[in-house]
Image 1 (cartoon, rainbow, N blue to C red):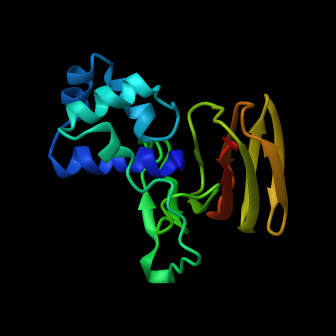
Image 2 (cartoon, one colour):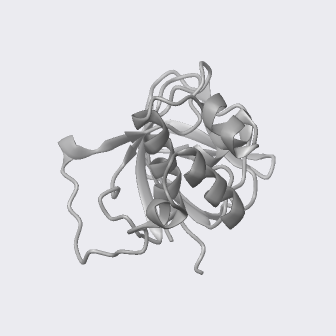
Length: 187
């Protein structure tokens, strides 16, 4: 199952119903912070928690999960069709994530193009399930991985275990563009 698509689906359903994080969290018995982490693919909810979220959104669990395992043979996303994805944005982290394969509901990889403005960094290094690949298309960034900082310039790439806390940072004077591919763990 594509966990990134599930997280995006939960957020979209909530926003379509004009519900706040607080309202849905209260209906599930969870905290606003927890639900935000679910929607931003920082926490994977258990099946009982998914059932609570589905109920809070007024749908069945099966409807929430419907189609997440479908795999079309070919998915084309044109440049102007890229989808901006909210990934825990804050006043300090204004990076823009563009989903490059969102049209395929069930995928084992999730490619993003990340534009990181100068002076921007995620507040803390965080882990997530699976593996990750980074390729710096332009600019220079730092990757903090397990408390060690690695400087990456245009053309550099990294492949790593994403269960180790990590974060991208751009302490430099120019924006950077990074191709990032998340690989979901095999089930």
